[in-house]
Structures are given as structure tokens and as C-alpha cells.
Length: 96
Image (cartoon, rainbow, N blue to C red):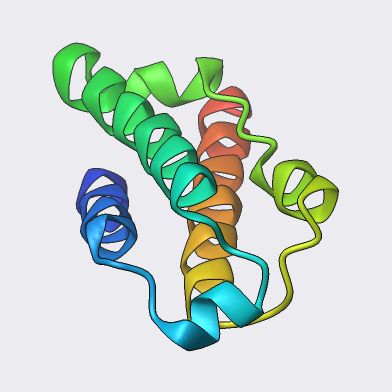
């Protein structure tokens, strides 16, 4: 799957209303919206400027979720997959 497509799927997942389980894991509407916007900005940068732009993306979503004390769950998994894939793409681009 293309990185921009993965980011698009993450944005879609984060736009959906929070379920009770999400709230119990520490998600709030504001946090969901802020992280969705951050991922959306990354996606826009890749679409607008091309895949080489990934070298400038530095997501620190794990730190953000830790600071907010978000527990493991489906939304956290989506966000962490985004961070992992962006970091892998950045590392791969940087080594070329």
C-alpha cells in the first residue's frame, strides 16, 4: 500500500466518531481531531510535493499519545502504523 493511501485510511479512521472503547483508552474528541489533522498535513505534503517530501516528515505521534496516556487499542494501532511507515519511508529515502 502506498504511504499516502495509508495516511488517507488513517485520516478516515480518525474522522469517525469515537466509540466508548476509544474514550476508555484515553481518546478525546480534541486529541482525535488534532492527530487527524497532523496526519492529514503529512498526506497533503506527500501528495502536493511527491514522495521525496517524506525526508522532512518527523512524526512524534508516539510521544504525543504517551503524553496523553492513550492506552492500546484500534485507533492507537492506526496512529502507530502511520508513524512506523513514515519513519521507514524517511529512512529508506535518506539512505539513497
